[in-house]
Length: 231
Image (cartoon, rainbow, N blue to C red):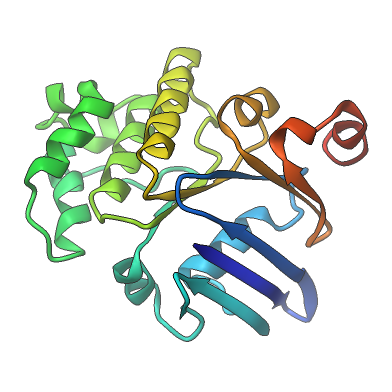
């Protein structure tokens, strides 16, 4: 389980995260929602070690991650697909995927075939440069690369942003497949409400750097949406 407890983050003297606490269990998709600029991406960055909290705790299966560098957190089981995907555009699809495994000191065995089962288009494009892929294909590549690190928890930041509808559907099916395996937790930052309702189990809503609503996704009603999510 991933557990955040009372995370505080400041930028240039301004409080960005205010006592953020949440949990992600294996086999669970947790949707972190909210309007633009409320602290969702900063929350993910505090988990992966790109932002240093003033105080608070980030634990994965009981191991404290605060104090570990980002590579140490990745080796502990945190997989991260950032907003904008951040693949290596000058490297081939094959090279991008290899980096995911090399980072963990792994060999590309059956796990690579598993990625190809989830995203068949990647197998067809192994020798293409990442930079020439479509946005949807780059997103699939970024998720595949993260999966090859063998994560215990997968962080996805806006995976549907700028993606064509058929790829959104495929990413949704992939998330549900990974959830069904039952060994990995998924923390999904997403603004596309229907996508969250389709794939999510639990929701947390942020406003001004704090969690202001939470619960099972089936309890995400029109009143909550109107109060915290409608622009």
